Amino acid sequence: MSLLTPEHGSTIAAISTPPGEGGVAVIRISGGKSHAIARKIFVPVGNSGFSERKLCFGKIIDPETGEAVDEVLCVIMNSPGTYTGEDIAEIHSHGGHMVPRKILEILIGLGATLAVPGEFTQRAFLNGKMDLAQAEAVSDIISAQTEQSLRYAEAQLEGALSGKVNALKDQILDILAEIEANLDFPEEDIDPITQNRLKEASKSVEKELSILIESYDTGRMFRDGVTMVILGKPNVGKSSILNCLLETQRAIVSPVAGTTRDFIEERINVEGIPLVITDTAGIRDTEDRIERLGVELSLKKAEESEFVLVVLDQSTKIDALDRKILETAGKKKHLVVINKTDLEEKLEKSKLRRILGKKKPVKTSALTKEGIEQLRQTMFETLAGSPRGADASELVLTNLRHKKSMEKACGQLRMFLKLLERNEYPEILSIELRNSMDSLGEITGEITTEDLLGRIFSRFCIGK
Image 1 (cartoon, helix red, strand yellow):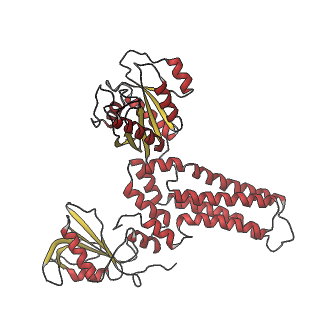
Image 2 (image 1 turned 90 degrees about the horizontal axis):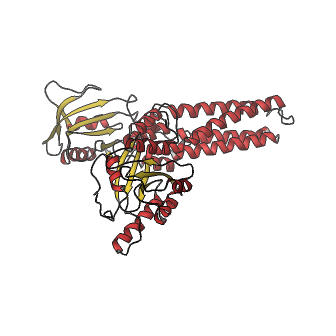
Image 3 (image 1 turned 90 degrees about the vertical axis):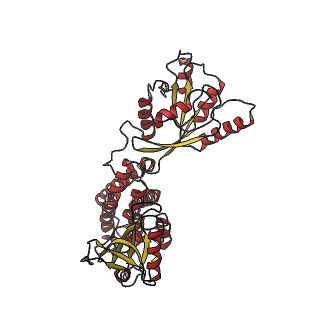
């Protein structure tokens, strides 16, 4: 694949800050003509003049009218020591809608091309400033919803995943070297001692890959979040529990059953896990057409969610509706909450134990806030699989593309082991090893296609 360079690539420009009112907007220009274009519209004020990597104060002048557009700060940076590896200029103007847009229009009129989403980072990748896994981490940093997801993205940007992938490739390369050493003697089988050593080395790599593949569910959860539905009969305290978790009065709370008819959706952070919580209409048989539609929507939302919080009322006995709700939740990862512990207990413990088996419910009182912190912790433990969850220093996969590439590499190693057991020719064995290395190379971008790059960088925001 040909690389974009300052000499041969087009010069691109974009507004790199979010649109809307704000104190400052940054307009970024990258490419061989970026400095020349910036000099055509930037006029320093006083003794301020262009000096690399130093902000200069001046005015943007429209070359067509000679009118001043804005007072700005401007900086130029020389390749290759820039984000994209190309010459870069940045204009720091006042924020808002009109000023940055006007400056961008002038830049385009002078020969710059409007950058597409992710084009600056794509050029950084193509010019060797970062590999593909690191480039994807840039997008993850921008979209991080919690500190934990940010830490995982920062570790990937610093090369933690790339370093691990390259180390595994080196181990496979060592195995391949031993296999290809036998190519000069095709009539001889690989001796048993060497064969055992190759088996152990291959199984070691396969095990490390398997551990990383298994980490994806945790990584995806911290990166993308989890959808959760609060399910229960009317008036069991679903909306009250939502308000407690949000620590604000978001949902209307009323002793009148059936108050919630539509669903309410909110986001919270549970120990680093972004959680999208949906409070639904109470499940009951009703003749009210609107409420019935709400009940149907509640059950549909529960089926679509990843996690269900079932709320039972301690002051009432378990009935057929409760069992139906628990049965619906049982198809998903779920947690049972016994609410209204401030009231007299009428819920039959023995019956509940038979229904729940080994699963332990959490007891709460949304009225007194008792048990809410325990509920948060138990929600985290249920989702993360342990009280501790994932260590921020541990390497976990957060990207489905990386997982699929590792699964391919793992499958190719397993095929290599089968062929090795059958004493296949070294030429056949080496094919599977090379395929496995190529699959890992897809993660860092050593092996890639323009279609893949297009899919990855199209998800970026414009200006990054």
